[in-house]
Image 1 (cartoon, rainbow, N blue to C red):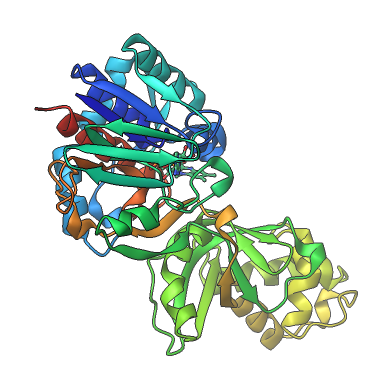
Image 2: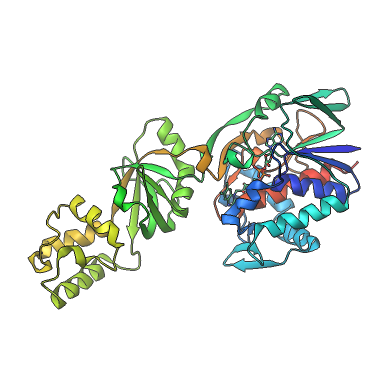
Length: 409
Ligand SMILES: Cc1cc2nc3c(=O)[nH]c(=O)nc-3n(C[C@H](O)[C@H](O)[C@H](O)COP(=O)(O)OP(=O)(O)OC[C@H]3O[C@@H](n4cnc5c(N)ncnc54)[C@H](O)[C@@H]3O)c2cc1C
């Protein structure tokens, strides 16, 4: 029996390895000249491959019960056992899991060794454009060549970061086979905001609690804590922003106003911030206003922030500020607001929201409920995780189950 895995990313590597371990004849077809380019780039090449807190609440999907079932059958514990078998030593950082060396290439090297050892055929630089079921066999077509296979595992990813290979070209042929697609949108992607962010501010960072509110002031997202990065072209990035990007599409598509709130210094109450500012003013009353916030926010942010809240003369001494000014300054320091007007492009996106409708996939086997012997693994499905290792965990879980069930007679 020949199993063809289309897509040599994390999910494809896992599926092919497991199927080969089970004694199946396995072929991987990959459109790029190299396997696992996205995995190699993950967490800046450090390979945050899973998270000890993996559960369905860290995922976005129209079908979270499906996600839960898959993770219950094959979750972190089972993944760690496979990784141990591969010889990958693991490091925990909080709940995040990394290869001990913090190099994702070390994960890839171990998988490639298994593929070679089990004579898995690897076809590189071949893009599959069409999959046809011809009686008992699949015909897998690209330019100038057709492969035959008994079973097919589709692990081609979604549309995110196409520079690493996943370009969504496979979706039309899967629709022709009868599958439906939940519309794809960029996830874990920087946000475009108003008001304008001055060029000089690009590169500055601000730490705090960050969340989204709707036009009625209701919080409509989880609250994330971390560092925001100000970028050129009115773009905000950083992990909390990427997390929040997963919420914004329905508001943007319906033209419903959506706002981003940053609350810096969560450990400082308004009162303690006022006390700190008053002490600082009293200790050096002649100090210019522009120096009052040094060490509180990044220096480059000061000439951007102060005029926005009405302080025009930044050279004026701090003792020109009255109690009302200081109260207002503290209020605004703890309350930064932006309107969300868009996301940047697929190129910056770390994951695809949407994909193959999971109601058409068996969660125990990852087999299509429409086309027998067709399986799915990884990001191609309508399942996307938060950042922190959840997306790669999804690739390992589904890759294992698809590879294992495809190779079981
Ligand atoms: C910059 C970045 C950082 C990330 N960091 C993390 C992180 O720290 N932790 C985490 O958990 N996740 C992270 N992710 C997400 C994670 O890398 C992906 O969710 C995961 O790699 C998806 O694996 P996959 O195998 O499903 O798809 P992919 O990795 O996209 O692999 C699909 C493969 O299929 C090939 N392919 C596509 N179409 C065809 C075709 N028609 N014919 C042949 N081959 C085809 C592609 O070339 C590609 O190699 C990150 C993503 C990015 C972009």
